Amino acid sequence: SQTIHQWPATLVQPVGSPLSLECTVEGTSNPNLYWYRQAAGRGLQLLFYSVGIGQISSEVPQNLSASRPQDRQFILSSKKLLLSDSGFYLCAWCGGPNQPQHFGDGTRLSIL
Amino acid sequence: QKEVEQDPGPLSVPEGAIVSLNCTYSNSAFQYFMWYRQYSRKGPELLMYTYSSGNKEDGRFTAQVDKSSKYISLFIRDSQPSDSATYLCAHRYSGAGSYQLTFGKGTKLSVIP
Image 1 (tube, rainbow over the protein chains, first blue to last red):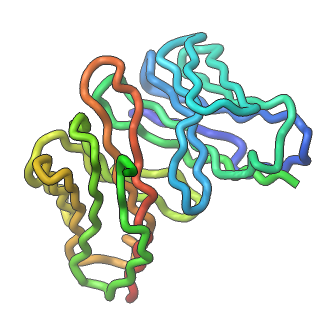
Image 2 (cartoon, chains in turn cyan, orange):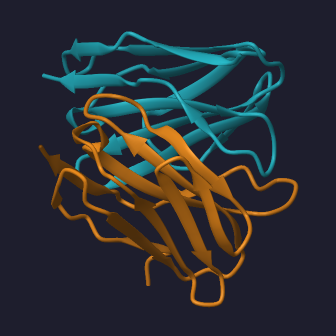
């Protein structure tokens, strides 16, 4: 069966520091991968998605970036965090078009 | 007009009650519909996935889709305290290249023992 892993579960970072969140999927090949941010009362906001290695589409211009160095690995990064980057970050995968997405357990990021 | 509207609640019901959760959407191009359950501090978990108008049942859960009215519902029978969570509806377009979901903001449900 397929599983998705995200880490860390919780992260506290100072303003201006870099960020790297990692997501890996097991038990499938060539998944579509997604990064979302969930803010209280604002729903899920799609940040990036990827349909293959090295292929990244950005949905929201911001100081975050994403990379997909391997088929089942998706990384969310920032060079300098802002206070507004605080939130709950979720990684998801799906098997292809018209398939439902499956989520990891998220990383709660707090910026001080 | 927002693409997906979902009553945020909170909704509080006694144990054993039938729960009805609803979403409306404006884009008739949406063809696939999902319900997710999200416990506090966890990722959303897929509950139901359907693309047809009508009802789909899975245990105590029934998803209902009315494409003519652009309205979807999730019914929970014999609700349990473990059903206390936030429920998110989601929709997507059909066809190749349709990689994105559009989510409602979620309805927070509490089932009181």
